[in-house]
Amino acid sequence: MERFFQRRTFSPQHQGELFRAIDRGEGLGFFRKGKGFALLLPRDGLPISAVLRRIDAALVDELLLRGLSLKVDLTRDREEAVRAVLEGRYEMAFLLRPPRVQDLKAVVEQGELMPKKSTYFYPKVASGLVLFPVAEEGEVIEPLV
Image (cartoon, rainbow, N blue to C red; front, side):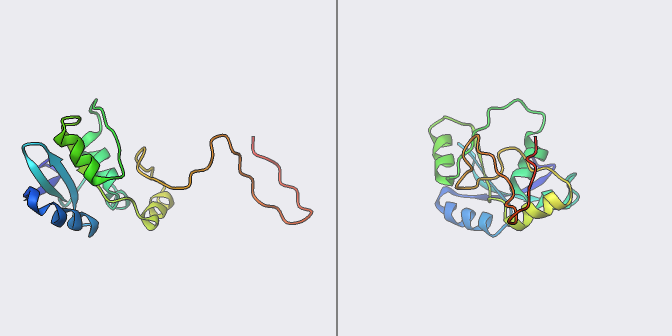
């Protein structure tokens, strides 16, 4: 981890300060039972594209988890992630910002791929529903097969 990130530690009493730093985009949050909280600040020269560098989940996926056989679970709730570590259900938690729409757009425009499970959109399209473009009156659009 030190190869890619500098670490700034936070005491449990300053958990809110850490969350605010994450929300400001200063770095990635990290929590490990017995080790406390840290803000991981990306180092210069990371082996990842500039557009993916703006996506917290891409930094974790590409630089820290790639090639490892780990059980990874996801939650939208930072407090739940911390609680899961404290209760012993998990060894560590990465506390990330959700990707912004403009960053998602930049990733697509560069022909890059987002990490799996890195976006959360609601409401979701119902499973099995097929969407077709809306045609002008009298125009026929052939369905894609």
